[in-house]
Length: 181
Ligand code: IMP
Image (cartoon, rainbow, N blue to C red; front, side):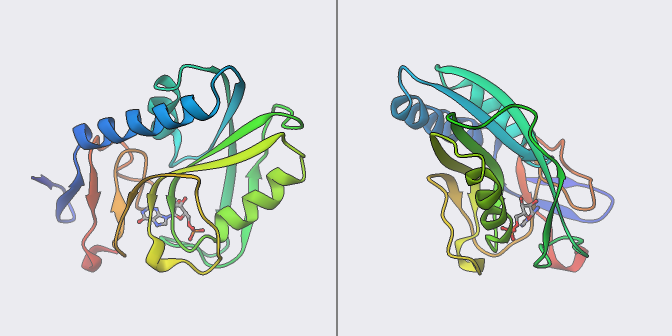
């Protein structure tokens, strides 16, 4: 299936049904691991918002939400190397079961930075869930505890993920052709 857009034809990598099925599976794993406990889902703005909304609804445990914002210096479509906080969490994380929700794990620089920020709060436990993992691009040796799909080195958009702030509202995950980057 293809999307027509002003820039190019976008190839669908994962359909909304494939995403929905995988999100339910991830939710079941998290529910099992945190049965009888409470968790706080912390989404990384803005890419993880749609994933967090779907994931959280498939985890039947006592839960709250929060969001954290990060930016990479000089980055347009990829992480440049330096990450900074643009929005901190609003709820205390000390002693809580924190589940950090990421849209995509690429070089790992963002996650490496965020793990340090989160661990400084001394949570009871910190788990990371990433919908997508571009494992072949990793620079920092970080891993997610729960991964939706491992993908090759392609630039993806949709289901919350953007290119220059566009395409977040596509319900499927699509590949943006390299010539449009
Ligand atoms: P990392 O620090 O290189 O792991 O980058 C993580 C962040 O870069 C993600 O949370 C996304 O915001 C962004 N990113 C990396 N690859 C893609 C992509 O293919 N599409 C959209 N955003 C991406």
